[in-house]
Structure formats: C-alpha cells, structure tokens
Image 1 (cartoon, one colour):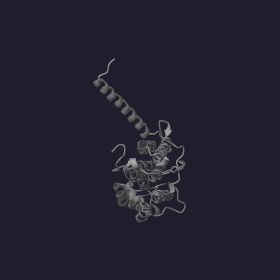
Image 2 (spheres, helix red, strand yellow):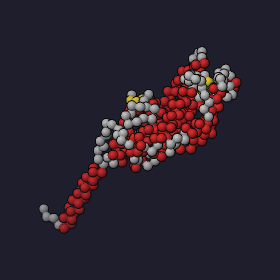
Image 3 (cartoon, helix red, strand yellow):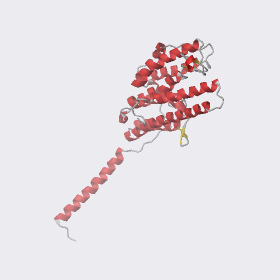
Image 4 (spheres, one colour):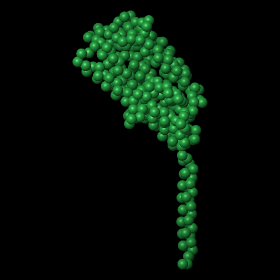
Length: 309
C-alpha cells in the first residue's frame, strides 16, 4: 500500500490526538488520588481550635439550667436573671451570641432570657402551674420543670434552640462557608459545636441525639463520625473533592438527626396527652417534650444552608 502526503499527515494527526488523550487521562488520574481514610481522628489541634471557649461557655449554661428545675434542685429553684444569661452566652471570642443566627440572637436577648428570668422567679417564689386554668398562672411556675403561663418550658427553647440557631448555623455559614478551603482548625471547631470530640465517645448537644436516632439501622452519630474522619483525611491529603463531599454529608446528617429527634419528641407528646386520665406528671412531661421539639424547629428559622430552606 502506498501512502501519499495527505495520508501520512492524517496518520500523524490521529497519533497525536491519541497521545494527547492518553496524556490527559494520565494527568486526571494524578489529579484525583484515592483517599485513604484514617481509622481515628487526629486530636493534635482539637483543644486549640478558634471557638473552644465559646463552646465551653455554652456547655456550662446547658449543664446549669437543668439543675435549677424543681425536680432536680436540692436547695430550691433560684431566679436566674436575663443579664446573667447574657453574660454566660457572651463567654469566648467568638461567644455563643456571636455565633448565633441574627434571628436566634434577637430571640435570646429579647424574649428567651427575660422569659426564663420571669418564670424562674415565679417558681422560686413558690408559684406552680395551674393546669386547669393556665391563665391563673400569669407569671408561670414549676411542676417538675419551669414553665411559663402557656405551659412552655423556656429552658428547652433556649438549650435545644442552640443546636441549630448557634451550632449548626455557625458551622454551616461561617466555618464551612468556603468548602474547598476548610482547615483542620475549622473542622475541629465544627466537631466541638456538633457536640463531640476526637474519640467520638462523648456525645453532647446535637451529638447526644445523633447517638440515639438511626438512619437505615445505623446511628447518625456513627455516620457523622465517619464523615469527620473522612473530611480530616481529605484535608491532610489535599483532596478537595473528597473534603467537600464529606463536609456536605456532615451537615446533611446533622440536620437529619435533629429532625429525627423532633419526630421522637412528637410521639412523646402524643403518648402523654392521649391518655384517658391525665395526671399532672403527664401534662408536665408532655409540655416538656413539646418544648424540646419546638426549640429545635424554631431555631432553624432563618438559618440558611439547611436541606429545606
């Protein structure tokens, strides 16, 4: 077979095209290495992340308030003032108030803090909820928990509200605002705000409920822990696609875990209030569960980046 100049040129162009494709594929393989996920989360920088003081302050408040309930206290319920609560939420730089969404911060300062002061004072003065006529308890009072005159436990609006209105919001919209450039320190901060640590054995705040609820037979906490390890490994190995994917899964699973807990509380409310004979304890526990659910749901209001905006 004889080759003319046009045939030779065509073969040369075809060969160059094939070599170019092979080279491109080789480069793509080099650009996307396989992620090796560590079996543990490296704790080296965990205690020096940027929001630790603020998280510690938030945890201190969340451990203090339950001890002030009539059913828990030994010396009696005390009045906790709005200014004291604001000071507690102002610990750290950034503080819990600094990390809160605009809506939740305004609610804390203008409604929740003053409301808790009013109700805790009423309870410390000896007032109790009149379940037969809530209007007869205008300042609120106690019945195992500290309620307002509508049967709402403001403590739960405050504490459970912090899961989304502070922790989820700050993680999603500040720490993870630039997914491709999330640092190890920001990931540590997110883990602490979620409510756990590098061992994943401690589960507080959102993590506490992620450790109780399941998705397809696996606890949310286990799934979220895996994604934190994956994200940290991806940061160390500089694989941005894997990092972004893991971080997006953390936030999705976190939101779903809280939603699952709301559903659980809703069943509690139904169980307590559907009894043929309601005791004071039933009413108290039913309103407690309702307040927990509302605390989570309400604090998601105006938080951007959630699954269902």
